[in-house]
Length: 65
Image (cartoon, rainbow, N blue to C red; front, side, top):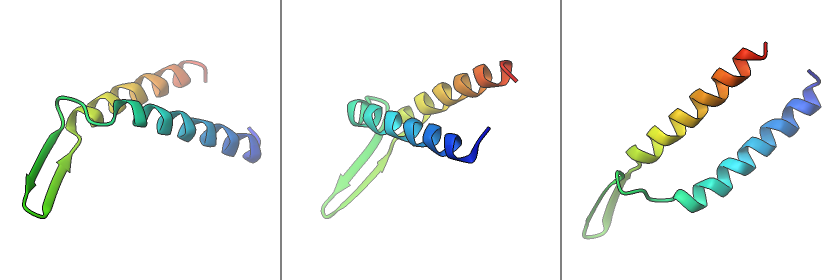
C-alpha cells in the first residue's frame, strides 16, 4: 500500500471518529465528578464502545489479509 493512500485512509478514519465523538459525547456510563472549581471526567462507557468498534474493524481487516 502506498504511503499517501495510507495517510488518506487514516485521515478519513480520524474524521469519522471526530464526527461520531460529537454525537456520543457523554454517555450514561461515563463517570463525572464536579466539586467546586475541579471537574473529573472519565469516559468509561465511551471507551468500551470505541474498543468494541476498533476490535471489530481490526478483526474485519485481518480477515482480508
